[in-house]
Amino acid sequence: LNGAAGTHPVGLDLSGIARAEGGKTVEEVFAEKDELEGKEIVVRGKVVKYNPQIMGVNWVHIQDGTGEEGTNDLTVTTKDTTKAGDMVLIKGKLTLNKDFGGGYTYGIIVENGQVTVEDAGNGGS
Picture 1 (cartoon, rainbow, N blue to C red):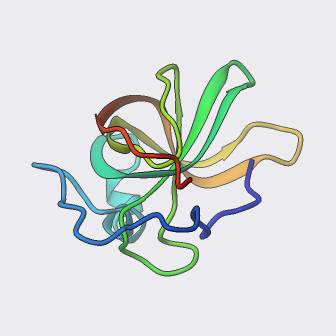
Picture 2 (tube, helix red, strand yellow):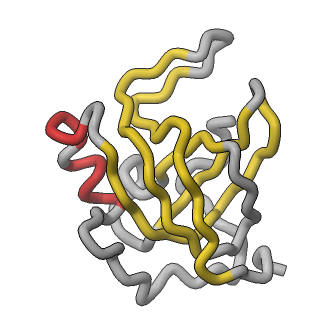
């Protein structure tokens, strides 16, 4: 689940992604995580990795071109479906230091997020 953090499909353009209205950038979520913990956040970004049906939920990694390695990739669990390359709007509660067991620990994650596909991408192909 954690393998390719910081990487994105070849040809995926992360430039010019507009901040969600009333929302945060990926980098801001990391920078303000202590104040945002337990609160609902809104973030727009592109899906860089999608893993369906692991532990009963879909796992989505989004990036928006902000942040550096370690603060540029936000993980979301959701019942909604999407795919790599999609532009999405994420709404959900920010959780810190979530331990799913089996070695899967996340310092920062959006759980039970609502994923709205705004622009279906080509999956980087």
